[in-house]
Image (cartoon, rainbow, N blue to C red; front, side):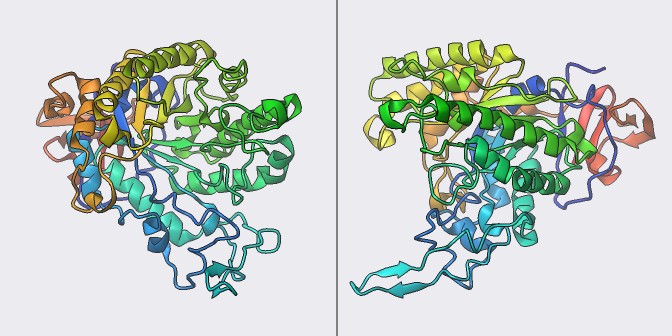
Length: 470
């Protein structure tokens, strides 16, 4: 089988149906290969993940004329255009993580939510009561359609796309996915149903689409850093044990649900995050490494198709400390995650230093280059959290932090930056036989000048090279 894969991405202006050609796990790109081929990534944040975030302040849902676009623009970002993805690809980015919040689009009516002026003259909202107007299991088809359009926009540029469940987790009171064994048992059916729907929607997409089971899932105390940190005395073994067991159960349910849908999902690469996506950094508490140590690799019927994910936001006020953080991070991830049998991505990274771009820019740029360099050296992919192109700059599109973009890109490609020849198409003969990934001959003597005009959208083997036709 072909192990040294050279991809040729052939883009079409219009979308075609995905072919139903099935591939074996042996031929589908492994998790290790996928992480390597992602190169450097970016998060399409504050977009499809936007939501009201508080049952007492459901300001989006109070708009009874709200649409899918209302949510996408709610947190200050414009509607996502294909041109943004083209700009990212041309700048050297190989992957985009698309965070998606699903609960506002899962059958709850929010009919009780209304805005009004209270006795103090303030505009407030009646609360949403999930106990009586609860979220269901069916995803709004209009929302799914928009998610698919954004995913297509990424993949039509030949980039990898990571699709997840985002602010259905986290510290807000709207989160229904909580790292707790009791809550897991209550939400297991809904969680698996959501993932089966997402997986069915995208089951014929090629290996560049990767699913991420959940974002930053927290315990019943909303503890960051490690489970039960927010409990009295900053640790509670009962809460912590329940949280880590639940994380591993959610991860296994996610893998089981996606695999059950078949198609390309039978061997699609899947991502599972540690508790809170915590990276284990620091030495100020003996439990900081617990999220890494307690994370288990889910059981899977195919080998090397699972990926671990963590997030990392160190301070950059002191550059030496920031670089030390990166060095320790790489060591910890290799020791506690990679050794369990799966590669790692840093699905979100940046800095926790307030206004670092304006106040500590030199440190930020140097740290950013170093983070990407070290991740690449350790066979890990990085996904910068937002920035680079923000707000209305995305509509142009334009990088409003071009020096930060350059620092990230140089971290991967070197001081010369990204050269388009790095990803230039392979040289193919004028015509060639076309095979599926299982080695079955599909077509003889197909013109290679415009494969998209002759072949349905899928992955093929042409002249010994793996080719993705869009």
